[in-house]
Structures are given as structure tokens and as C-alpha cells.
View: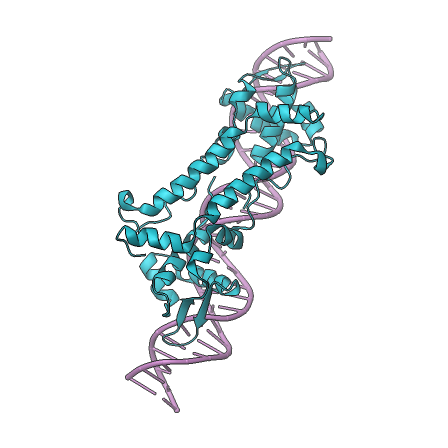
Length: 141
Length: 141
DNA sequence: AAAACTGATACTATATTAGTATCAATTAAA
DNA sequence: TTTAATTGATACTAATATAGTATCAGTTTT
């Protein structure tokens, strides 16, 4: 079971790069080569992040992408939701015979509790936090 | 992001059925029809669970499957590991440029911490617990 | 005008998940 | 002792998700 797919993985890395160069434009190409992310793949991810208002772009030569949203306000949960869909333990694990009536389904509570825990753990991790962790270790993203 | 696939979902439901009828054999067919699980699919899951010593089988007419391991000793984590592989947040999210040296990678700690939380949450949920929850709600699995 | 870019979108490849089919061997019961 | 009900083993197909590639039009700087 893999929690983060390449989508989210690459997106996080690209955001770290942009957050580190806050205020200036980075081209998709430079991010792709520096972080070893497939170029066209990355471009799609960047565009998706524009649609979600995390970053902005500038077209043309010397153009590129720049951070828009506060890195501390971007959580891993959000990125997972964008690129892998909302975290859900099971669509409804207890259907039909077992759970004809959802309201009565005690198991749903258990499952939903775990969903909450997983989500809240990922919510603690923001791009800003990851960046500071990296910097305090003397690594640049 | 879907945490439980059909594999695990069906396996859990089958185990609940077996745990409820502890001591007697239930055929794959009866479990499949009662719980609306595709018959041949279920058979493969049951065989996999035999290999992992969770249940035993008896061949021939009136044969079937029976609980072997204590339901309280079967965690959802184990089932996820059997049917979806070990829980891992990312293979190694921070490779190459960022993390040429794994030991130095502070982010790995963050990621591994979340892995631990996710796993331990699922470890709290055993088949035994789920069964009792169901029963105390007046539902039979 | 050319080069360096993004926007949009279509396409292919690979892996995972889900489900089906088949045949041999075993056991209980008619 | 034959038949029906079952598991064991395994091969196969279908659907979906993930990963990656390609192309062309439009924009901006040089």
C-alpha cells in the first residue's frame, strides 16, 4: 500500500522548490531537471496547482511558475486530495446485508475515525514545515 | 485515495462471518452469497488467508473454511499487508538531488512518523473488536 | 523574427485492481 | 459406489489508475 503516488510526490517536491525561491519565477524545465521529474508530467501537475490557486504562472521567455499560497497553508492532505482524491478508508465497507442502513452501521464509525486520524496527521505537514526542516538540516530543496 | 481495496474489504467481511461462526465450517459459496462477494474472487482471498494461517479449510462436501487464529489477534494492518503490501507513505520521496544520502534526510523522519501513526491506528482495529462492535449494535455479520 | 516559455489536450504504456473460468482432487451423503 | 458439493491450483480477461510522452498553439522577452 502506497500512500503517496508520483503525482503527489512530484508536486510536493516542485512546491518545495518554488517555496524556496519565493517571489521569483522558476521554469518547469529547470524544476524538472534539478529534481529529476519527467518534464511533461510536471507541467500537468503545475497546471493543476494553478487551478487550485497554489501557484501562478507567467508565459513567454523568462516565464515560469511562482508560489502564490502561503507554504504554511498548503498541507499534504490538500495535495493528496488534489492528486489522489479525498482520503477515504473504504467507499462503504459494510454494504447490503451487513449495512443496509448506514446510520446503524457502527463499523462506519470506526472507519471514519481512522480516516480522521490519517487526515489530521497529514494536515500537520505543510510545505512550509517541510521546507524549514530541510533548511535546518542544511539541505536546499 | 482509497485506503482499503476490495481485497481487504472482502477479506475483512469474510473473516467477520467466520469469526461469528467460530468452530464450524462455512463454505465459500455461502459466504459469497450472504455477503455479496464475487465467488471466485473470494475463494482466492480465502486461500491466501489459509497460507497466512488465519483460517483452515476442509475439502469435499460439507467442507468449507473455519477460523484458526484468534480474531483479536488479527489486525486490519495485517490484512492490508497481506492484500495490499506493507503500508508505506512513499518509496523514498526524497531521492537524488534532495536526498542522495538517506541518513541525512530529515524529511524521511516526518514521513516515517506518519507511517507509524497510520499503522498503529489500523492495529487497534482487530476482527474481534469489529465483531463485538457489530454484535453490540444488534447486527450479525 | 527567433527563442524560451506556458496552455491545452491527446496519446501511449505499465501496473494494479477486480473479476471470471476451468479442471483436478477430496469428501459426504444418497 | 456413484453423485454432488466442495476446496486446490492456476490461468485468463477486463477495467481502472498511474506514469509518462508528444504536439501544437499562443505569449513574452531578447
